[in-house]
Length: 293
Ligand SMILES: C[S@@+](CC[C@H](N)C(=O)[O-])C[C@H]1O[C@@H](n2cnc3c(N)ncnc32)[C@H](O)[C@@H]1O
Image (cartoon, rainbow, N blue to C red):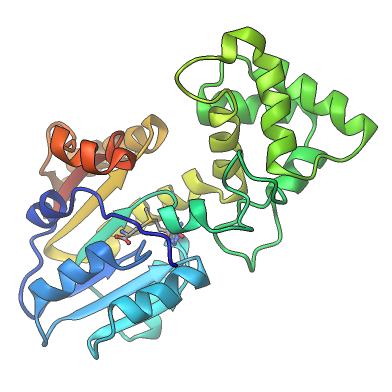
């Protein structure tokens, strides 16, 4: 059975994106096609939806969910959006949508190495055609670099201690599985780790961001938006942790000061209690939007 991924803040995202009938829209994180399906419904048969994902498995799922003539799917990443559009002979689009991070399908799919409770190889690549894996990061980066990654990408308070524990363990033998790494992080926390969240949560978040260069990719996606959006075109971004939200907020603010964008969300839009109850994965979601001037 395929893992279910419930799309987050769909109505709110559509209110910002305002897909118009006949318009051309990019969903740069097409995933399982939840938001894309709604965009498709709103643009109607004469519109065009370009769905991008860096995960080829996601594209297969999107292809079956969005079987329609006015959908084009491409294996690419945020830094490749302009190349995808150039390849299609499209200069400007009416909307650009990002629903950041990983999908439930990726988290739950065996063999992807995203989940700390699994005995799988430390992989964590969204795009399995890329070379760098979490195993390489954990076993080859210096202890100092690992500590910085844990601190900067996940605000991990015990970054130094966890990095030291990783370095000590890998001197004995390479760290190969998610469970081994989760155990190392849990031991570095000791009794203090018996809280609400698993003590390895931040370690896994930080590694995932590093392996997939998530912040660099997000910046590339944001940077191209003033160039690819038509006048009056809109961008909507859903983020799931503070580093991403901060990058989006700063980018919109700067673009507004430069007269490129009008910000549509003074504060981020958050899911209501009903959505969070039905889909706990939505609890940290923040949606921001802007319009090209
Ligand atoms: C949260 S899921 C999107 C789910 C989708 N909105 C839906 O309703 O099914 C994020 C998706 O974006 C993809 N992704 C993340 N970062 C990406 C990037 N830099 N370039 C392209 N795709 C990316 C992931 O592979 C994943 O499939």
